[in-house]
Image (tube, rainbow, N blue to C red; front, side, top):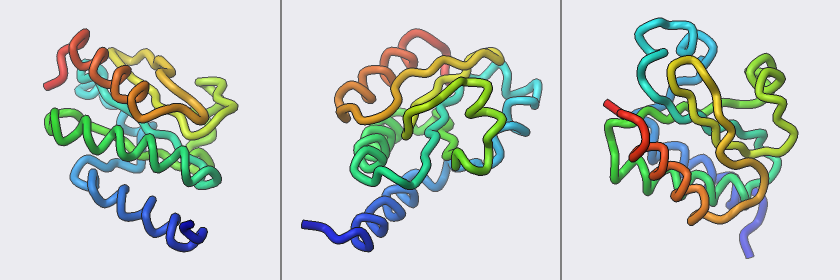
Length: 130
């Protein structure tokens, strides 16, 4: 069984797997008119449920490997409280999709890697990611 320290390390390593697409300032990203036309995925975490965060990060890493052109933003809920309030999120981690300035919560709280991947792939097929 992993200790909390090892699990924290695992979560941090997972963050590094998708580091090429990290932006820790989604508010400024969302307010940029150039980015309003580009679909974006937000992973909002609270660093409390490492097992759930690991599942989300595994799914996001798999999806990002399949579609490296997508942008995935890692958002600490404590640093972006306005976004959390706007989305009325109460469960974390959460997967949020933004398209043309609108936000859609795709998953929140404990769920499976397969469900997260399904939402990511469905949005990718539905919207133009480039």
